Length: 495
Image 1: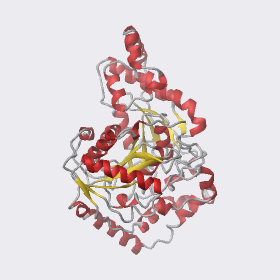
Image 2: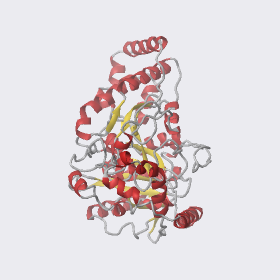
Image 3: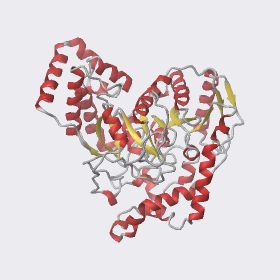
Image 4: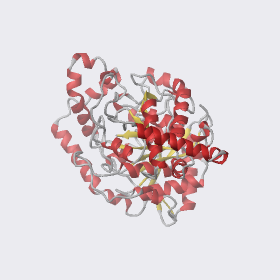
């Protein structure tokens, strides 16, 4: 990852900025807050303070780095921490603010990146021994977009190996631990991203989502996870599973913060074969919009089948709250199943084919990951194209799902996350884990997971809200309305 070079002028300007903040006296210091308190700020709150010169990007970055140093041994959310680069970048961004240049709401905001997202000059491993020495020469477009928006990159986040699993326990860099219960998995595959946000080890993080991998860990860790319309954000420069399923999106403390990050990510990439051209929007404008006229669809099958009883109770209560915020609930909504397995398996194998053909590389894969990859080696071309055709038709006709409703509401996940030790001994049934989330990757629809409760044992529960193609604003508006009508997002992980 190419960090901005720090010149003598940058140093002088940063020193002048620090002097200016110091000269503001005790009042400014009080507004700024202690290091640990700073990591509790939302992106909205921190961004406004930075813009008003009440908070230094350097001070905020140091607060998060201190939090990482404190909690990394227990949570293991990071693979690579970029302390020096982050501070150098924060100093340059502070100098810009003091000179009157503000890049927007992400200016000076510390963010983490899942370690399957390419960063030029910086290790990008996909949490695998296969890529333990892999250093890309170019940034992924989403990295460039965030840097241009003023984000400070704290480091690369741990994950399930090659994003092919839901526990983040299978990783060359030791398992990620859930900040709500260190014995439990944080979900996956973006487990480090969700855990880092929940533990306040970054203000927000990027994750990737092929079948569940932003929303599932968001649900497990009690944070917000947004998967936008397929192709709205470029997936070029991201180690793939299946380009027909893969998405990149934010994990954040609040719905508003996820909207801010998504606004920076969105944009057409002509070199990404699944990128789409869409009107440029500020998704944050949807925050606070009225949802009173919206109709909720609740597809009972299969989304509510076999739920953990505590999850079922929390989601039913969330639906009751939403009923009062909107025009009502339609209980007979239906999401027809589409078998996209041949596409996912074949595209995953296609990426790994040369790697697994090399005996030295092949033996570096975790056996579980290798087995899943090899599941795709015998997919016939006829099966692949038939499955892909089904996907395309489902996407083209997805508007039919919303003829009588405006959004769909379901549980994010049917069960609470497994204990790490148990997951390593016996991998969970991945099909059951992704049952509620995969359909929205297949249909390419925007969907978000927001906290909607906790089990008696203190584990978070997620509510999934999904909308029509390119209806991110609608999904964000109703998710924010629910978030503000409840208190679940205000709870802090006990780590």
